[in-house]
Image (cartoon, rainbow, N blue to C red; front, side, top):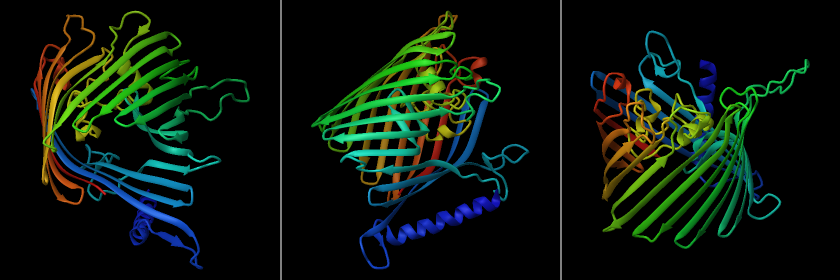
Length: 434
C-alpha cells in the first residue's frame, strides 16, 4: 500500500508540476502544429478543529481534507480526475485505522472523488457525453458521487440531461451456471431540463429507481420521483422554490408516498449585505402500516447511507441539518436529524455580510419532526449559527463557526437517551479553493 501511495504521490506531483508549467496553455507537438493536449489543475483543502458539548457528552477532533484535481483535454475530449484525502488527526483507538493519522501516518489512504471521460459536440453541436465517476445532485433529491453515464444537449436557453446511475453492483453475475439468480443491483434513470431566460429559471426532473430482487436496501423497488425547481433573481431580490414527490415501492413489502418542499427568499442591501428567510419540509412516517412516507430518509437510504448520513442533500442549519464543515467526521454529524424517518421541517432567518477581507454570517431557525412520537412530542428545538472568516491569501480564508442548539421536547444526539440537552459546538480552521 505504501509503495502504491508513494507512486501515486509522485504521479500527482509530476502532473501538477506539468500543469503549473503550462497552466491552461496548450502542449504542442514537435512540429508546433495545432494544440494536442491542455492541462489544468485545481485544489480544494480544509483543515479544522471542532469541539462540542451536550450535557455530559463532550467531543473534540481535528481533521484535514484535500481534493487535488487534474483536467487533461485535447480537442473535444476531456479526462477529469480528482483525489480525496480525509484524515482525522492522530491514531484512532489502539489500532491503526484508515480514518486516523497514527505516528508515521503510513495509513493515509487516497480516495477517488472524480474520474470520468467527457466528449463535447459528439455527433451534433451542443451534444455532450460522459462516463465514469462524477457528482450527481438535484435539489431535495440527491447530492453524492456515483458511477454514471451522462448525455446532455444544450439548446440555448435549454439544457436537457439524461443520467444512468449505478448505485449498487454487488455481483457482476446476474445468474450463475446453476440457474440461480443474484440480482442485488440498484440503478437509477434520471432526466432533467434546465431552462433559464433572463431573471427566471425552471428545472423539472424525473428519476426512476430500480432495485434488484435480492437487494438488501431496495428489494424489488420501483420508485418514481418527480421534482420541480423555480428561481427568480432580480439582482437585489431573489426567490427559490423546490418541490419533490416520490411514489412507488421502496421494497417488495412497502409502498411509498412522500414529498418535500423547500423555499428561500432574500434581498441584498448596500451591495454586500444579504438577508432573508427559508423553510423546509419533508414528510415522515409513524412506523405503522405498510406505507413508508419518509421522504428525506428514503432518499438518503437510496442514494447514500443512513448510518453515514450521506445521499440526500443537507440543509442550512449547522447541527440539525449537517451543514457544518465538520460533517465528514464521526462526531460532527451526530445531531443531524434531517434524514430521520419521522420526517423533518424547519424555518428560519439569515443574514450575511462582506466587508473587504471579512465575511460575517448569522442564522437562526426552529425545527420539528413532521410526525410526533408516542408521547406526542415533535418540537426539536431552535438553533443559532454564527460564522466569520478572514481572507489571508487568494481564495484562502481563516474561519470560525459556532452553533448553539436549544433543545425542546424531542431529544436528539448521543445524550438523547437521557433527556433533551442543549448543544454547543465551535469550529476553527483554514480553507482554500484554487
